[in-house]
Length: 264
Image 1 (cartoon, rainbow, N blue to C red):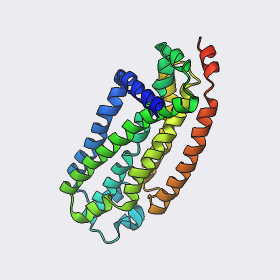
Image 2: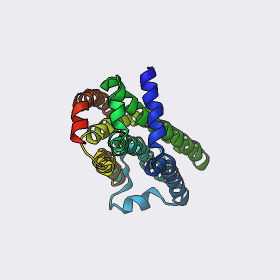
Image 3: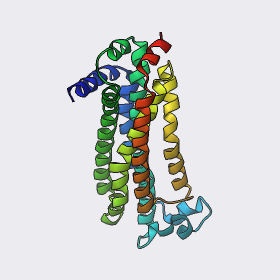
Image 4: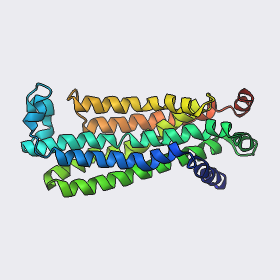
């Protein structure tokens, strides 16, 4: 554990010198928290019919069972808030990708990777330390941002709408699926980062992990499908299995000697 803690401390000391990392950790959560609150506040007067008219469907066809027992105004707010809650799935992917992609190839460009790989630390300990250093800030920042978002929503909406925002489905998505997505993103970023020689290339390739989240957000926004508790639960189980597999593959792919010789 001491070796892993040392790696974590070293990672935080190194990567947070990078302005892009600081931006993603500090300013991105502020933007993704403020934007939904401003939008919800400005759209409180839009009815469910008006929103459904944008997609040429009736409210029932567009919103499905989501508006059952809700007024038109409440349904509009719930729909918008559901979309914005999905945005909190982007944070635990985008932030650790930036950190993890830089942690390997970035160290190579600054000539600090060779001494690290020459130490007696095992590959598992090395990658575990780097992974925790990337995942933990993303998860903590996401949870803090979501907490601020929930408090603000409670102040801006009535109890009926607020109950939908803190429904078990969304709590599971933010507090379980979010961290699992972060682990998935970090594994992908470290695998890519260990194979390329440029930090920006690693970040761009690893950023492809966000595509399923973006597609999910688009599908929800256009009414193609609506998330359900069952779907979120299935996604949690699938991600848990996928994370375990990717962690194993990441360790196996990280050939220390090959990395050093390839990048000489």
